[in-house]
Amino acid sequence: MSFKNTIAAAAVSALSLCATSTASFAGSEIQPGITTGIPLGAFRPEGVYVLSMPNYGYIDSNPGVSLGALVPSWVVWYTPWTFLGGHVLFDVASPMVNINVHGVLNRGGFMNPLLDSAIKWDLGNGFFGGFHAGVYLPIEDDLTMVGLPRNFASFQGVAALSYLKDGWDVTGTFIFGTGQSGTMYSAPGSYAPDWINVDFTATKKFGKFEFGFVGYGSADLDAPVPGYAKQSQIAMGGLVGYDFGAMDIQLKLTRNVEETNYGGYDTRVWGTIVLPLWVAQPPSVVAAKY
Image 1: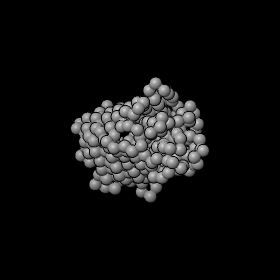
Image 2 (image 1 turned 90 degrees about the vertical axis):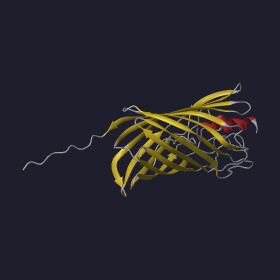
Image 3 (image 1 turned 180 degrees about the vertical axis):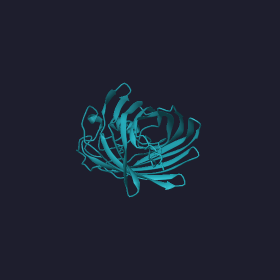
Image 4 (image 1 turned 45 degrees about the vertical axis):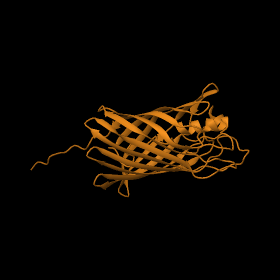
């Protein structure tokens, strides 16, 4: 794998798209594994919530690559509205990435902002399910030279199913995103494959503590330019969380158990902080007088 391809492989491990030369880049625009630990099929009480989602990892390629990613404020509004019997929400996020190819390059910047909407249903017996549809807006910054971010808009669809009962959270999240074709002369960030991610969670709460398993996989679905080497990966790890009342915190540790065209195995530490900014008060009960 060439030096440019090593940069590309590293960038996808942390977040989103990676495009370098016509030889290889990775296509997932949302970071593979970022939804692990989150019961994405379910809904919360009406209100506004902020998720902060930092992570940092190292790819044992040559040269070694450190990749840090941060979603400083993923803002989610659970509305009071319903549609087709499901609860409606809207959310927005603007991730950031820093890539350090040891002794060669150190660069950071913003990724493509995401505008998203969703509808979620209570399916009964502890099961919840929902769909998301979103668009990534085009952007160019200091990361463009390594193919991050994209300079074109793209679509993302999500299907999630969660089982939440007796302290269990068993969730599968399936994410599909679109790319854009180019030529062997196309500039970095102007092309990408269609892609798919699968995130999985199986945890159990014991009082305020939460423990369990997380795993994820990602794969490029096509070759947008000649000479493209499609990438895929599978990673597994564990989760520990604690409910502080005012906010929830989760820590995760994952490592690749399989990789294709990434140049090395990624070991990553993740954090997820969920903070309610505003939660609607339940309607007061007025006793009728006779």
